[in-house]
Image (cartoon, rainbow, N blue to C red):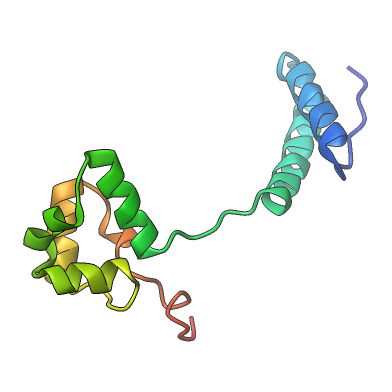
Amino acid sequence: MKATLFIIENDKDHAQAKALIEKLMGSDEVADRARMAAQARLIEAYERARWPRRTTTLPDLLTYLMDQHGLARADLVPLLGTASRVSEVLNGKRELSMSMVRNLRERFRISADLLIPSKRSRGLAA
């Protein structure tokens, strides 16, 4: 199949590029597979620029988990220690201790990596 690659600068180009990928998927030709891989990289680059991933803050993550599990702030007291600690954590004024991380990880069955801030998000050199 003879196909050129689409440089993606807008949503119309994006749709055309995705359609090309679909056409190329059915081909067994080496050249078509190479075109498909190249077009997929162009699509990925456009999507990363168009819809960048943002890191979630700890308060946003905990608020989401509370909402998903039907919990109130008071339900976090056994996991974080006291009502004032819950408030401080949910307002972004306190980081989690390792015991808090352990409790939250076990309660919500999530990775501790989501609960521990990276060096970059704390403003430290990476």
